[in-house]
Amino acid sequence: MSLTTLSAPRTQLTILFLTISLAAPVVNAQWLGYKEPGTPRLPNGKVNLAAPAPKTADGKVDLSGVWESEGGYFTDLARDLKPGEVQMLPWAKEVQAAREGNLHQGDLLSECMPPGVPRINMTSVGMTHAFKIVQTPKLVILLYETSANSTFRQVFMDGRQIPKDPQPTWLGYSVGHWEGNDTLVVETTGFNGLAWIDTAKGHPQTEEGKVIERFSRPDYGHLMIDITIDDPKAYAKPWRAKVPIHMLPDADLIETYCENEKDVAHKHN
Image (tube, helix red, strand yellow):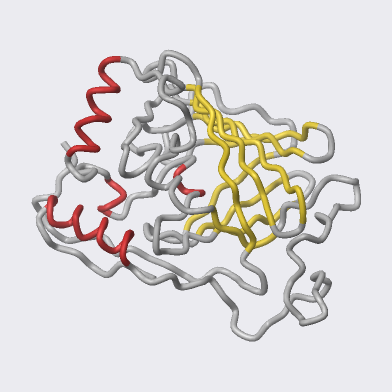
């Protein structure tokens, strides 16, 4: 589902975005009628999601496919954590409380900016935010069908290091390596500090933040992303969340764009 051009005042725009995110019907990513060859299937023709995870020629688990997260983590990444596991510094706690109390007003996602990492991997309630993994030995590509423009991430697997003084970006710079044959570890830094970690809670992210994602695939139809948020400017210690992901079988991405709103009052001070 695409968001069309919006020109309401900022508060109305934020509420409209939340309404769309929370109430819109699910529209699955799809390429109608196409069944991918080589997919394990049950006798009734449905994809066997419990089949063993595929492997690449070099023995690594193959993460390729079209995926979406379980609901709820888009709004609150820390939803499964106990009180005290996320220890915000005083300024960050004040900012987070203000965002939550104001229906996430000020979230630039509502102005068609990228969701940021790790929020870009998450699905909001009532909407499909699918992403596609394309895996090669030296580069893993993540393609996103999001409500804030189809976009991508590149995870470099060729041994390069993250730039020491990078141009800050919404999605950061990502490098990866394998732990054994079953876990892809992705480290991302170089953020611009403008994106939020999640939507309803509004946990902040600063330009000093680092996100470590551990991707594993226990069977054909499921992923797990174990996420570590390490941002010493906003949090007293790193914190972790585990996000379950499920496959969208016999599906593919649909082009999705949120057009830039035209209200001249929306200026970034």
